Length: 378
Image (spheres, rainbow, N blue to C red):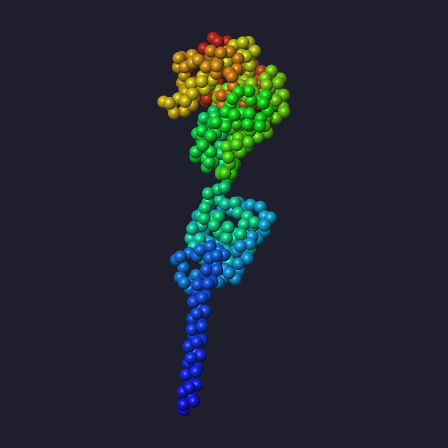
């Protein structure tokens, strides 16, 4: 009987030792595995239960490479639209089907582990199989595009382009833009194209898709590159045939841009201005006076309308009522159609034009000043 009691005590001691070792192992697992996961994948969602955190950490560590390695390092970007209310499961399966993810299942587990499954943002994303699943998961938390559209409207002057920058998504201050615009020697354009101290007229209208990180120099690079692409050899030859160099042609095109509402009228308006230039008449263009006056405080814009008789007497080399010939430089951003009108103007006998009285925004053209007066609205 004594021997049996002794054996029972020994078994009891071994059992206690086994239990202690087991508990130590459990405690170690509860601490070490989540810590290892945190080092590899970042912190876990603090809302997870201890068991859930341990379970997810274990599964993620078991498939570590599938989470940290991209499917295809040489892949390009794909546009992926996440719809409002789309479930994480649907998103994951779509990304796997699009060959952006290797395994939607482990991707979903990571989303839950990191607490990112409930914060995927609807929107348009540029994703790539060259991104790891962890990188993709975090990218889906911010629908802010890396590229933004920047639009210059036809007929804008430099100050209007600058005013559009604060809401464009580009980190370029209007003051920085204007300062750079007054240094045309840095633009990369041929020196004989830009005679003055400004790039007015040489920043083409249109939409530009640019990275948010675009610097002011990169912005001007994109704008002037498009200008050079649009200014074809045929246009330049057309300017020469009219007796104009590029700078003079852009100057005249900018005036035509502000005068013509309808693009199809630009060649006819060009013909009026050429007829006036060829006979030594002044251009008498309201937009050049508006440019001379600058910002119109009451109207909160740069193009005062209507002009008064006193406005027409403003002392400025840009005022084509007081000065003959072309003004010193462009007054706004002309379109390709306005430039084309300068290169290939209509042939007409007209010396005058004025806006019609029928709200069509089109013009009536006249040969004589008397006819021009008769075209006035009652």
